[in-house]
Amino acid sequence: MGKAFADMLPYTIGLIVSPFPVVAVIALLISAGGRVKALLFEATWLIMSWAVLIAFIALLGSAGATGHDRPAWLAWLALIIGVLLLAMTIAGISRAARRREDAAPQVPRWLAAMDTLSPPKIIGVAALLIIANPVNLASLAGGAVTAAHEPLRFGPQLILAAVFVVIGSIGVLTPYAAALSAGGEQRLQRMRDLLVRHNGALTLLLLLVFALLFLGKGLRGLLG
Image (tube, rainbow, N blue to C red):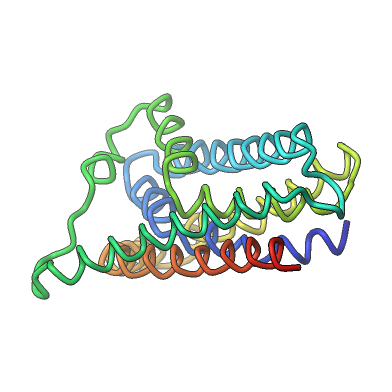
């Protein structure tokens, strides 16, 4: 299990650094009753990430992708995901190049309304940021593909997925710790502004990193 986790570890980067979930937690924390709302978001994030990762691993196992002798289709799948992520990166860079340099970063409407969301909607946003965000989904998919390489029993797989998700959620959990310290609200506001300002660049960088990881994994599977 140790080797499987070591191989999965690079894929936690996407979950750790992905900016919008962190900004969402910060927006909740600086709102009325923010700590309870943020805890609800973070609990949903942890449980949903873990469930999606387990589902991916189980799906790969049922398709015969578990074990050291990987089927050729798994390498092709990794290659296709890598090409798609690379295409998304190139498209994002092209959009950024057309945008005016002095244009202010656009804050999504759902993010601006985070402080007014009801608990069910907070749960929905947390779940949506996992399954609809290509960076987070790529992180979980990469972790699942790597975990499938090791023929582990279901119990160790649950533990492995839980450790992966907890480490990957450091970024989402950090604002809550910052809120408990002195001057936490001002610090959170600065973090929010910084992440919103550089969200596009961070997302493109992460997409590029994961594109290269998946392309490398696919090419190694086909050529090795």
